Length: 415
Image 1 (cartoon, rainbow, N blue to C red):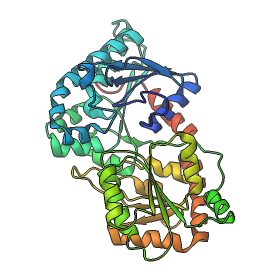
Image 2 (image 1 turned 90 degrees about the horizontal axis):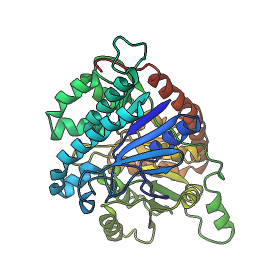
Image 3 (image 1 turned 180 degrees about the horizontal axis):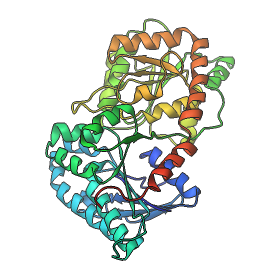
Image 4 (image 1 turned 90 degrees about the vertical axis):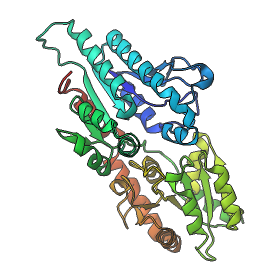
């Protein structure tokens, strides 16, 4: 099967941590013998690439110095911080659409999988339409089932359309009649349902199941060597407002005299403000900002972790976690989690079994952290239960199987 993924961003180089779940999906599809290709925007003149069995087609939409609408941060965040970048949107949409049509005509895909229908729906639809026509050679009727157009919704794109650009809602109604629809969580499906005429399947993303030491072993080894054994809390993700790291710091400032240490892995526009906040709260000696780290260091961080925190909240655009894939990664390492009831997080965490779910308030978050720090045995049991849940419900093999079945159904609606 020849598959094209249409995406906003794809790793530019080895070690570039961008949409790791999409990269994992593409690589696993390639391992099964599929021809997997990606259509993504260029970044500062970056051209086509091939890595991990996946071919990446980059479309140019501006002079190299201006091709920064994507990759460094989410496009809505970029536009919020630098409104002048909105001038690039027409060129971005047209260049993506032309590239999609050209690739479809040349490559004749079996499936085009669009991620974020806004802004990629037109590019994906044209790629699927051109593929179908090229495969059929213009003959009507044809026994060829045509190229399947499949779209995964993450919820953020729908929220943005509804709040920032209402005309996009008309496009969503038109587009959803022409694509097979997938949502990554129940919360995402609920947002898409008003625009859909048919069923919306839930297919989350998964994580690999690592072979790593049980969580906390590195900390216990350090304790045996005479070093402090303060429980280590871990956050991994982009440092943007919807991740709620500022609220995590506020909550930890109220956790009394109980010992703890927080490691923050990730980068983003909020880092400087968060470092300033930690110092202001008197937590500078207990919070470590590690920035971007290579895979082996991330595995080591999970090995040190007593618990993982994802205090997701609503940002100024009412955006939040679509699924919380990083929770799956933490759980796959056997780390118990403390997370807010936002977006698709409740689809992942079973409260009191694989972690602790709390309301999106600082006091509730503090109580959840206190609870998991106060009972190490219960925390370890939650970690093991989380590892089992990931293996059973979020393994990549079953996810790839489900997507293959959707692709195989072929064309839907009006091609």
